[in-house]
Every structure is written in C-alpha cells, then in structure tokens.
Amino acid sequence: MDILNFSAIELSALIDKKELLPSEIVTETFRKIDTLDNKYNSFITMLHDSAMTEAKKSDARAISGKRLSVFDGIPIAVKDNICTEGIKTTCGSRMLADYIPPYDATVITHLKNAGMIMVGKTNMDEFGMGSCSDTSYFGAVHNPFDLNKSAGGSSGGSAVAVASRMVPLALGSDTGGSVRQPASMCGVCGIKSTYGAVSRYGLVAYASSFDQIGVISNNITDGAELMNIISGNDTLDSTYVGLKDGFTHSLSLPIKDKVIGIPKEYLDGNIDGEVNEAFLNAVSVMKQLGCRVEYFSLDALKYVVPCYYIISNAEASTNLSRFDGVKYGYRAADFTDVNDMMVKSRSDGFGAEVKKRIMLGTFAITSENYEKYYKKAMEIRDDLSSSFDRLFDRYDAVMCPTSPTAAGPLGVKETDNIRMYLSDIYTVSANIAGLPALSVPCGFTGEGLPIGVQFMGRRFCDAKVISFAAEYQRATDCHKWLPKGAI
Amino acid sequence: MKITEETVDRISTLAKLSFDVKEKDELIIGLKGMMGFVTALENYDLVGKTTTEPLSNFTCPLAEDKASPSLEREKVLSSAPMCDDTCFIVPKTVEEG
Image (cartoon, rainbow over all chains, first blue to last red):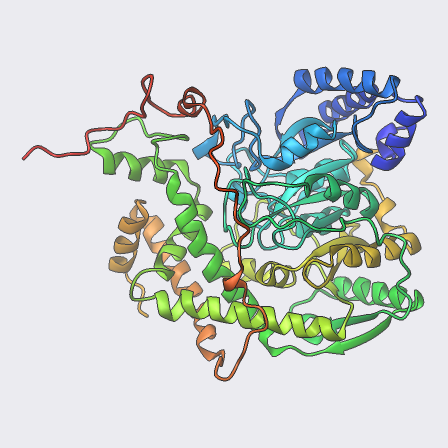
C-alpha cells in the first residue's frame, strides 16, 4: 500500500508507534514526486538534501519519544510566495526567478519548530494573480484528474501536490479564493482563516488587506491541525491577532439544529448544472445531519467582485512598486538612466496579467479617480462586512459552491477579463469581510472533475466553520477519491 | 471615463511600466471592460448605512517599543542585482547642472 494515501494524522500515529520513520515517508515522497511531477509541473524547487537531513533529525526524535508536535516528521509543500531563508522564492515570476530570501516567513518558523519537513516550493500564478495557475513564468500546472484541465489558482501547485498524494499537506495563500478554488478544482480541502489569525510576515504581498496564508489537505482534520501549527504567535505582522482557542476544539461538536444560510444570488445565473446538482446534494447531506437550511437574498453580493478588484489591484500596484531592480529581483541589462532601469526591469520582469492589474490599480488611485473608485469601494467593503456580521446573527454558517464551474481547459487564452474575474464570485466575499472560509470536495462532474462546497462563518469562529466540514466529511467519501494517474 | 492611448501612457508612466503598440491596444480594451464593470459601484447606495465594525478601522496590535535585532546587512545585500560591501548600487540619480 502507498503510505502517502494515509492522512497526515494516520502517518503521525504510525511514527508514534515506531512502525514508520519520517525518513521513510520523505523518501517515498520524493519517489512519488520524481515519478509524477513531470506530468503536473506542481513544484518549482525541490529540497531533497535539506529535507532528508531534517527527516533524519526527526527520526531520532521519534525513536527517543521526543517528537516536537503531532506533525513532527510529516512532509509539507510550500507555495512559492512564502519566504524561505536560503531557498529560492520565485512567486512564479521572472522578476524573482533567482531570489533567495534572507529570512523565513513566520509560518515557516512555525513549521520548523513543529519538526515538519519542507520538501519543495510549489508552482503558482505569478504573484498570486490568476485563477488557473497558468500565468507562472515556470509554466502551467496540470490538474491530476485531467492533465488538459487547469488546477485552479493561484495555489494550483500546492493543491495538485496534495491531490496526487505526493505530499499529505501544503501551504497556499488566499487573496480572493486562491486556496479554496484550486482545492475545489483538485478534489482536496482548503482552509482560509479569519484575516489576522495567521501571520502574513514573509508572505510576498499581493493585496495586504486580503492576503492570508492557508492550508491544503486531503481531509479537514489534517488541515485544522496544521492551522493550529501555523497560527502561532508573531510580533512581526502588525495585523496578526491570532485565534485564542485554535482550530480543532470543535471538530467533534454536533451540528444538529444549527442553521445554515444559502445565498439565492449564488444559485442563479452562471452556475454550471453539474456544480449546482452536486451542491444541492451537499445541502441534502447537511439536512440529514440535522441542520436547518434557509435561503436568503443579499443584493449587495453583486458588488463584491468589482469592489474586490478595485481594492486588490490598488493594493497590488503599491505593493509591487517595491520591485524596481534595486534591492532584489530582476534588473534589465541595458538602460540609459535610473528611471529607464526601473521601467525596463519591471516591464521585462513582470508577466502580462501582473502588469494589467498594476495598471488597473494605479488607475484607480490616481487623484482624479481615487474618490470615485477606491474610496467608494472601501466604503462598500465596510458595508458588505457589516451585512455579513448581521447574517451571522441569523446563521451559524453560510454554505455555497466554491466555484461556479469545475476546472476549465488549459491553454485557452482568456480574453474576457470580466468572465475570468467572475470565476471568483463565491470566494471573494470571505476576503472582502475577513471571514473564515473553507472548501471541501462534494462531488464530480460526468467528466470526472472534482467539485467543491464552501462553508463560511463569523470572524474568529474558524473552529465552528471547520466543525461543519468535519461532520460533512464523516458522512461522505468524495475526499477519498484519487486521481487515476496518481495511484 | 474615456480610456484612450493617452490614458494608458499616463498610467504606465506612474506605474513605471512600458508597453508596445499591441500591448497598449489590449490594455485599452481590458481597461475599458474593467471600468465598465466597476462602474456598477456607483449604484451602491451608502446613504443611511451604518457599519457595525468597519474593517478600515481595524486596530492593529502594537509591538513593544524596544530595539531588537534586524536582518544582517550582508544577507540583505546578497539579494541585490548590484551592490558593494555596504550599499545597493544604482545608476546615477542626480543629473549634472
């Protein structure tokens, strides 16, 4: 039996019983990656040597009964926009193709303190800007359920690495759905915490008021345990507030008689028929588990995507101004003066999607447009956030599909930007309002492509949201289905 | 607002980016589409709306006012495209008078 078909918690139990050593798991991890990843392109950098060195140390701790955490010795993949000291962190961009950070992100420090083994850095849309993991300078990521289909994005590499059981766990980042949407497309679980529950220090910034580091796992319990590890204390991110009671205390709490709200707006219009059917089946499961389900209407939801794109692109235009060819990153070879150096370095170093978003963001914060677009979007954001606060006075959780469609074909140039941005319609609300949200598998299309269902909750009630997904997974088996090529 | 080649030129100067003619044409189409899309925000009526907990008023926790070690200069400089022992090196920034 392939040991990587075990969950991270099961692997941990085998290590505890001394039936398996971390170095054996890591060896098997690299064997699988070497065998499979030429098809998926989910990794940018592999860490054979450092991972084996750390695995041997973990072996010693396991043998002496002094493991550092429940996941000591468990392999993990890390999205390539999370800084790792001495290890390339490219953000999927030519701009940072050779960048080696001089420090670790706080979440990496937490992984190391927990004894986890980082085996590689995963492919992604350039700077997190995309929904298909096809804007990477290092090539597109392929979905293990159909190599001609997108893996979703932007954390597509992390989702594929977990879905194909090359690693049991991975870190991603979620600005508008970039953990949940690829998790949905690849048939795995993705968790984005409340804004502020996990330190962003060392996450290369796209849109700072939305960005959160999240986790991807094969089952929600593994993901919740990993969230406990990465949400540890930090003094380096001024927006970090932590989560007092952690993510796992409600895993076994009954959800009977809890009330789930479903936004009617999300089931109209653009949703694919098979996604709708899978979602309604998931709703039936929640009813069978004793939840009460109510449909509600929130007109403001139609403003979520334009509001998100104004603010996120405005923040991107300022955040990415740091890439000027001076302190780090790509510098053009030929230039006439310092301004020319910056313009050429940025124009050559960034890809088309990134440049387009910088342009839109810059446009939105020019003196003549600031009030009309950026300020208005910020006011609407506050109002939308309040609307969600009021929703959670009535509902214990909000449930909706994670994405309106299953994975789309790779290699088709998306010329309609609006359509591309609307693919995030179900996920951006959680980022706009800073809510905890997660995606779990809930079915498959006739073509065999995974479909995900999303649960959202009140800010800082992450564990409660996880309890819904945990109960759902105990009653269903979609999360156990493997892509054929990965068996 | 009308999006023209002049608009793209002005914004690209601010963003320190340059585009060829084909890219500019694509950008004009893309920006026009996006502007049409986000103009919907104008219809959002905020009159009389009160926010329960505005995200924009989020209070950040403060760090202790105490000096602590920062990154080592050598490590920071090691990522630069061009540097000497102590500084980043950039082209001349002051023009001769």
